[in-house]
Amino acid sequence: MARFPANDIISLVGGAPRYDLAESIGPDMRLAELLDASGQASLGEIPLCYGTAEGDPRLRKMIADLHGVGPHDVVVTVGGMHALFLIAFILCDRGDEAVTTSPLFPLARNALDIVGAKVRTVMLSFDRGYQPDLADLRGQLSKKTKLVSLASPQNPSGVALPAQTLREILAAMDNICPEAFLLVDETYREAAYGNDPVAATAVALSPKVISIASLSKCHGAPGLRLGWAITRDHALREQVVRGKFNTVISCSGVDEALALEVFEQREPIIAERRQRLAEGRARTADWVLENHHMVEWVQPDAGALCCVRLKPVVFDDVAVSRFYDALASEGKGLFAQQCAGCHVELKRDDRAERRALKTC
Image (cartoon, rainbow, N blue to C red; front, top):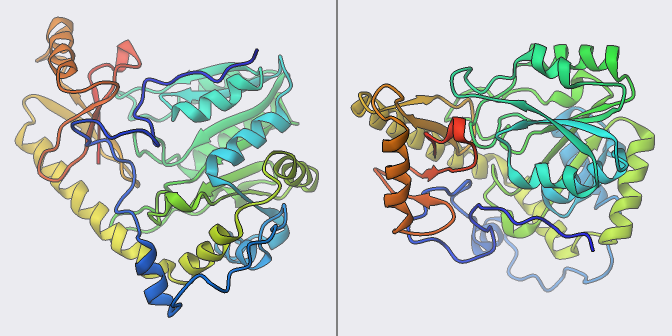
């Protein structure tokens, strides 16, 4: 029997740990805020019927307009994770190869493993600022590569991939595995800090680019379970629509109706969260500066997360192990401690990066 793997991370649907500074979104929207601003007194007029497998056409047009594509390039999914799974399932037969990075949001990696792909990994490191070594990435590509799956900004580092880096990756793919697609998870793309400019979507770089995102992070609406996949490849889009129909038929009509309201009000919704993110990053910068003799960080480009680590010149492996052992008595899974409004997640997943802390 095929089984889904367990993950040693905080469950997004389980109980909160004793200390939770690892929240990747915030603040959550409340339904009353959305409806009060829209002038709707109730949900009574929303029909509880099947939607379409493509998604509400008005919603697809709103998403398309924000990405410079046509509504026919957009498929609405049940959150971004549904899109990640469908792309992996469609493109990777058992034994095909996929290339991704580590660290990475675990469920994005799981989607590749579950479908039976042979996953080749490009290691990202604190010392390289979590930018991929392009020579290493090219070395992981082969004629069997069907999908390269990246995130920009990344989870957990918050580091974005420059457009030039993506162009070089696409050029290498065109030379080595021309049939492969480049998936870019852009969930945090619009989560800029304050008035910082928002990076352009990668979908414009090539018809071989698939962009995936959702309302969960930048908009603070993970409870709507509303995401999307954008592809300008007609055959792939058709398969995503069929895959959605064969897994969930359609999205919830209530979710789609509320998502339309979120998009109608997106500017003030995102602006408020960008200001909070800017304030959180500033507090984190102050904290790192105050404790510079013990910690250092890679400043994020966008999003609610970044990486801080215990300085290797101060803390040896024994001290780091003692640090984690002390935290174990305060909670389980991922451990976190609140400090000056910042969120810090302490990770165990890779020995080389064990010193790293995740902060927002």
